[in-house]
Image 1 (cartoon, rainbow, N blue to C red):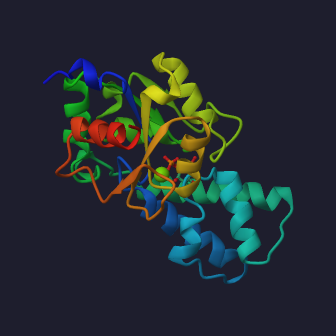
Image 2: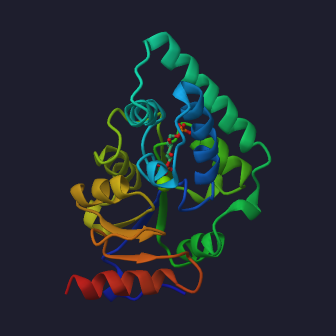
Image 3: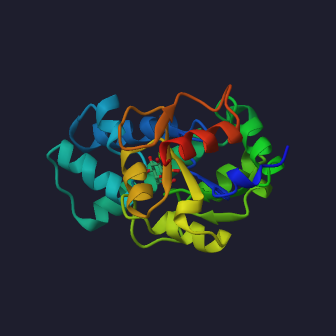
Length: 227
Ligand code: B16
Ligand code: MG
């Protein structure tokens, strides 16, 4: 199905990765929990973990050290960063297509069929590995991840770079995000934002998953709000 000219204002979708396309957030949580406990017995809660969503590895460790009221020298921090990532890589070693969020693969396919360009905007340095293991790398026309940016979310750099690669303006793109910092990043860059599994009023609207929604419906809802 192709889009009517009326719908052509939105030309691309940029997806966050962890927690939006693939359910890897609980693996990050599991790995960070071990680190927090190791630092000084701190029990990292799910609420604490929400603060880490969309945040770079280095910044996440600083947040955990703050929460645990601990301070470490750079050498110990570096060792923990390596340990966290090794643990995370171990946890995602069997990642496969069935680990995609429910409805995500159909939604990506439907978007492509509708002529909408697809980009990735993730803070993760493991994003390409995750896209490869889930077999969806080829669907993305632009990939921007933690290896390509200097400033993390809520700075819009990751999405602005994606827009540049896709060749569209931010207001022609919808960003899908599960993290508050990601939605703030999208909004401050001038993108439309849709929340996935998050309660916030900062996005245009929020969804629990990509099940039972079409790309056309997303675009219509965004356009109706901007009328
Ligand atoms: P890595 P996203 C983010 O990915 C995760 O939400 C966040 O929990 C993680 O710390 C960050 O990537 C860095 O990941 O350690 O793999 O480089 O949600 O922006 O796709
Ligand atoms: Mg995320």
